[in-house]
Picture 1 (cartoon, rainbow, N blue to C red):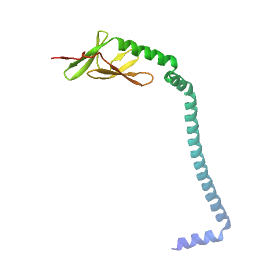
Picture 2 (cartoon, rainbow, N blue to C red; picture 1 turned 90 degrees about the vertical axis):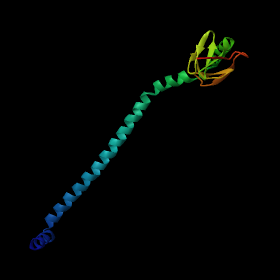
Picture 3 (cartoon, rainbow, N blue to C red; picture 1 turned 60 degrees about the horizontal axis):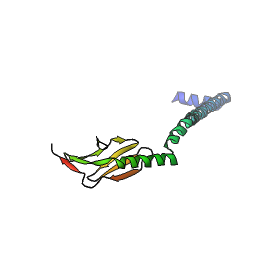
Picture 4 (cartoon, rainbow, N blue to C red; picture 1 turned 120 degrees about the vertical axis):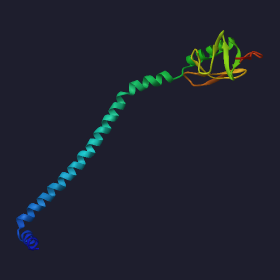
Length: 152
């Protein structure tokens, strides 16, 4: 108890000690503020770096987008492919409950590719093709009476 009283008297009586304590507390507060500012600046720098990297990728993005732009020439080429595929449709086969398509002498299954088109469905009398560029699905019909069932 005695020590506390002596310390209290020292603090109250000695003005230079109070002044030194105030300076120490002020410096500690400045250090805390500076640390907060540095943390905020580090976050801003990271954000700016991320933005810079994104801007650097823009030419790559433009190249990717350019590949996905559908031009009238692409549409015309797709229509010609559809007409050619439609002209060589021969029929379907049902084997083990799964339809296969016979097109121009070749057997195709769902997921197969014919030119730029992916086969997305095969039915008893039709086939659905998805354009690889436009993702447009076209349904083509086989000639009547061309479906056959194969036994295992």
